[in-house]
Amino acid sequence: DCVVYWMRLEDMRIKDNRALAQASAQAQKDGIPLVVLFVLSPQDYIAHDRSARRIDFTLRNLRCIKDDLDKLDIPLYTATHTPRKQIPSFVHDLLLQWNASHVFGNIEYEVDELRRDLALCQIAKKHGKIACTFVHDKCIVPPGDVRTKDGRGYTVYSPFLRAWAPILDKTSSRHLDEAPLPAANDHSVRKHATFGKLFNAQVPSEVEGFSLDPEERERISTFWHAGEAAAHEMLYRFLNTAARPSQFGAVDPLTKGAKEVDPTKQSRLGKYKDARDLMDADTTSRISPYLAAGVISARACVREALKASGKKKLDVSRDTGVGRWIQELAWRDFYTHIVALFPRVSMGAALPGEAWKDGRTGVPIVDAAMRQARTMGWMHNRARMIAAMYLVKDLMIDWRLGEKYFMETLIDGDLASNNGGWQWSASTGVDPAPYFRIFNPYTQSQKTDPEGEYIRHFVPELAKVRGKDIHQPPLHLADKLGYPEPLVNHNEARQRAIHRYKNIGTK
Ligand code: FAD
Image (spheres, rainbow, N blue to C red):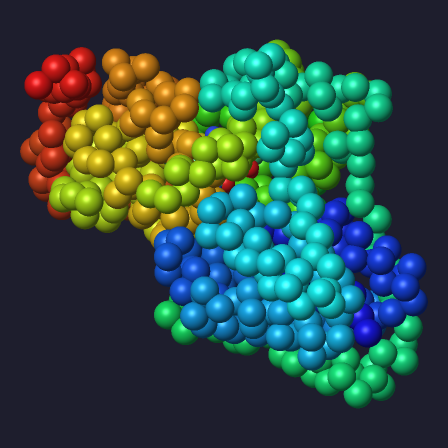
C-alpha cells in the first residue's frame, strides 16, 4: 500500500507544497509509504508550445528533487508517456500496480490539464479503489475566492487587487501559511519488493524533441541554476542585495560576492518602486523561471518580502518597494484566475514576424529585447511590453504569433501570464491597454536604457555607437555597421494602428 503525490510541471518543489504536504499527512496517518510520481508528456509540451529550455529546466529540477527526496527515503518515479490522452489510465494503472489508496496533486488550471485530472477521478471512481484529491496551490489566493458583489470573477486588475489584498490581510487568513515539509518514510521502504526498485529509476536525461545543444544547455543553466536552494538564493539576492550598474545578465545572476544591504532602502526590493522599469540594470527579482516551474511558492515570496522589509501586515501600496513587488505577484494571480474562470483563453501567424523573432527589426531596443530572449531564455518585463507592443501595433501582426514565440523561447513560459501580457499589449482580452496607447520604442529606449548599455550588450554591432544615436541610429551609420533599416516608420505605423483599431467593426 502507499499514498502517491503526483508532481507536475508547475509545482516542482518539496518545501511549502500543499498537495505533497497533504499526501505526506495521509501516509503518516495510514502508516504507509509516500511515493512521488512525475509523468513527462511530450505531446502536451508540443501542444502547449513548451520551450526546450523549460523542459531542460524541468529535468534539471527533477534531479535535484530526486536527491532531496532520497534523503527522506521517498522514491521519485519519473515516467515518459504518450499519447497524452491516455495519461489518466496510465497513471491509474501505475497506482493499481503500487496498490495506492490515495493520490494527491496540485491543480493546474488550463483546460487540457483539468480534463486530464477529471478523467483520472472518473476512472478511479469507477474502479472504487483509489481516492483522488486535487488542491489549490499555484496562486496566493485561489481562483474563485476573489469575486465581485454579484459573484463573478474580476476581469479588470485594479478592482481585483482591491478585493484580493483584504482577503490576504484578514488575521484569520491562512493563505500565506507555509505547508509542512513531508515526513521521511521508514527506511525499510528501500527493501520493499515494489517500492525499493523505484529508488533506482533515473530521471531521463532528455525528452525527445526538446533537447538543447550542449552550448545552449550550458549557457542557460549558468543563468538559471536548478533546485530549490537556487530559487531561494535568487529571492535572497533580490531582497537583500543591491543591483550593480549595468549588470543585466552577462554575469552569473546569483548572489556570489554580493553584499547585504538594507532591504527597506538600497536593496533591489527597496528600490523596486523606482527602478523596476530600468532595463539597463538588474533591478528585478528574476524569480519568474522559478515561480513558473513552482520551484518556489508565491506564498514564500510574499512572506519573505514582508519579513525582509520589516512589515507585520500586508503591503500592496504603490509607494513602497515591497508593496509594488507584491502587486506584481498579484498580476500573476489575476492572470491565472482569468485562465481558470474563462477557459477559452487556453484554447486558442504572420511575416515580418521572422525579423522580430531574430531581433532584426531595425529598432535597437526591440532588437536588444528579442536577442535577450534568445540568449537568456528570459526578458525584462519592460522589454516584453515594448517588444510585444511593437509586434502588435507597429507591425500589425497577430499577437498570437508573439504569444507562441515567447512560450517557445522563454524559460518562464506560463500560459496565464504570457497570454495576459500579450492581450494587454494588443488591447484585447481582459483589462487591456487602451487601443491608442502605443509605445514609442525610441522614447521607451531613452527612458529605460538611458545610456544604451542594454542595447550595446545585446546588439553588439551597435557597441561602438555613442550618445543618443544608440536609440535610433541614423540610416547611413546603421548601414555601415551592418544593422538593418527599421521595418516601418514608427509615426506612420502609429497612425495606421489607431485608424485600424478605431474602425474595427465598422467595415
Ligand atoms: P519581478 O518584477 O521581480 O516580479 C516578480 C514576479 O511577479 C514575477 O516573477 C512574476 O511571477 C510576477 N509578475 C511580474 N509582472 C507580471 C505580469 N505583468 N504578469 C504576470 N505576472 C507578473 N511572466 C511569466 O512568468 N511567464 C511568461 O510567460 C510571461 N510572458 C509575458 C509576456 C508579455 C507580452 C508580457 C508583457 C509579460 C509577460 N510576463 C510573463 C510577465 C513579466 O514580464 C515577467 O513575469 C517578469 O518580467 C519576470 O521577471 P522578474 O521575475 O524579475 O519579475
